[in-house]
Image 1 (cartoon, rainbow, N blue to C red):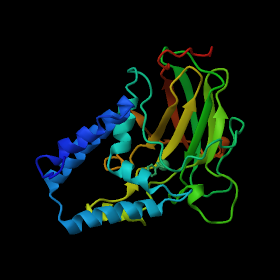
Image 2: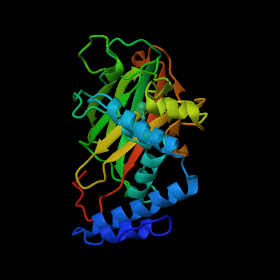
Image 3: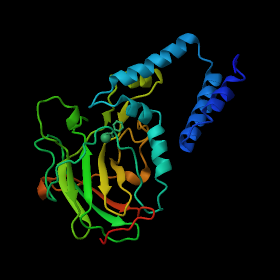
Image 4: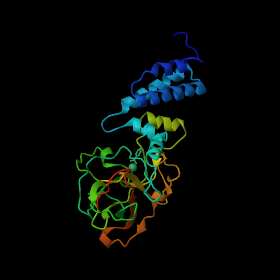
Length: 288
Ligand code: BEZ
Ligand code: FE
């Protein structure tokens, strides 16, 4: 077969994929070709625009290092991460809603005792974080791993700072007590721009968008027999709640900072959230 033109090229490529052994590879490849070709038909890029597109993706790739994942930022800012998240978390009505993981999670953070201060000398308004973890049938879940991480008062994560400090700050792992409760001390995080000194930042500028995320505390909560919950608690009143650059905000994840007397545990505000985990499909939940 030869002499392909605008009207025949798409089917020719799809036919060529027809022998793929793995049916999922076949399905995904066919859909990719159909949608990519229809995008090109709609946009009708000039040769120069197509070269720009290839150069943009090349720059996205070159920007990636162990500490910087520009492709995740591209997926996040185009709303693809939240779409994949939504498709994969069609959870029961009362389960806590999910949102993006983001690039600043560090696996296996240090496990600290309940009540520990994770701010390690960082300055900012004091924050007492309190919460609980329950099953979707209302049972408190004990001994559940609660990973948390958040930005400092200037909007930076520890892993973004090149200050020579080797300790992980504003992140830790806790375990819920017998009543499914956890608590720790920290400082109030700030809104912040996602890393925007690369091609994704240039894309945002060209699209007339800002790079900011509203202030939030990240949580990853895992217990055998339950879907691992990846989510944030957003701070009510933040000016970026309605324009999060990665489309991650959900009303049910927003909580007020409650003012506390400064002398109570040294905290000036309290942030509280009661999380509900969904049982995994076919999974056997451990006794809570
Ligand atoms: C974050 O919340 O840490 C984050 C999420 C997506 C992109 C950049 C940062
Ligand atoms: Fe974040």
